Length: 93
Image 1: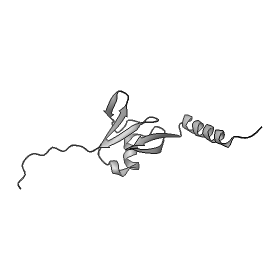
Image 2: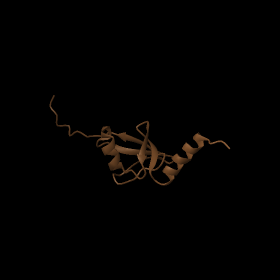
Image 3: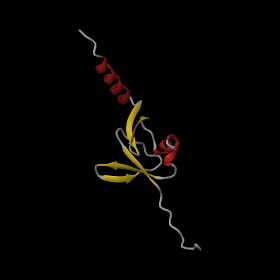
């Protein structure tokens, strides 16, 4: 009987994800490993380029904005979109 190292690695990765240790998500087009249950607030701390942008999750039903306390799911596709700032029209050029 031979030991299949690849199968053991895949089984260990599956077990870690199943136990809730890590998950993968796509953040602004980059595949990243995150702790299971990462919230939008924690995502902002880990990725400073997100800043105060709106965080949108792409799904089968379309795109929806996420609140700061919402947790990402395994395989989430998330994009940050800068907030639109409306001017008052009181500028002098």
